[in-house]
Length: 291
Image (cartoon, rainbow, N blue to C red; front, top):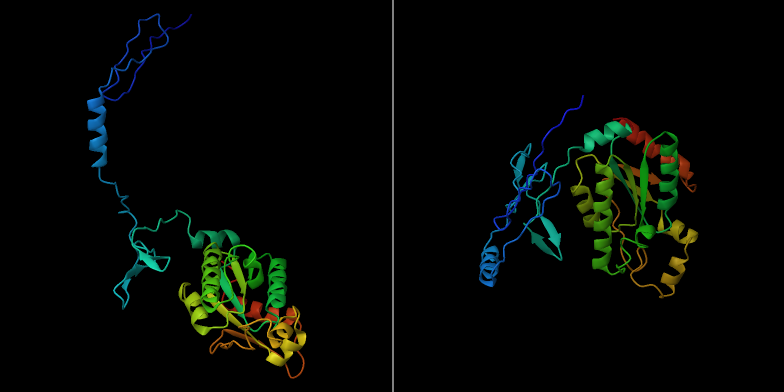
């Protein structure tokens, strides 16, 4: 026994589209468009020009708190109204889009807490070496890390920047912003950069939640760094072939209140693995190695 059913085709259209009701034997329908006058098109075009843009409403996304800064800007932990710097100009025309998966969710997944370990010091002080030892030791513990090395980022993200003072500040700003994204993803981000100026390091600290910026100062004397000179840069700077070199003809502003200081013990510099363990001990104490 077979069952039969009758189906009718339904068409949705604009006012300019005629509905077509096919006979029962017809399986396909064809829409016929009325001839549209030039005057009608001109009228439609003129009307569309007067349409106001529709602004997205984010009424369901309410901030947990709102703080008014001394400059009059209102900020919140959800950053509903977000200020942006574009070519030195603030933009008010952007809205932060909150994700359904946040930092806490990602940290639970990774079983660690995202943070930025900012290793600063003179060229040749051992920043990159300690960063590699640290990421290796944490990886062995099953922790996800990523290194932002000062030279490496200049191969790509910051390849358009020179070593002039304003470009050096922008270099650190970009590294800080990328490091912040990694930390928000739940990753332990290790930034290994000279970052000679306190104000630039302070600016990077200010964009992260309290405690998530961990400054590690490689307190190694200039004479030791220059004796190592792994890239031959001090020799070029002393010969006047490199201008504005940190520690020679450009200042290095040592941190005043670093969370961690790594230094020589007398005339002997501890192995990088020992220095890395000091950082790991800090992370364990502060609870960054568990969710």
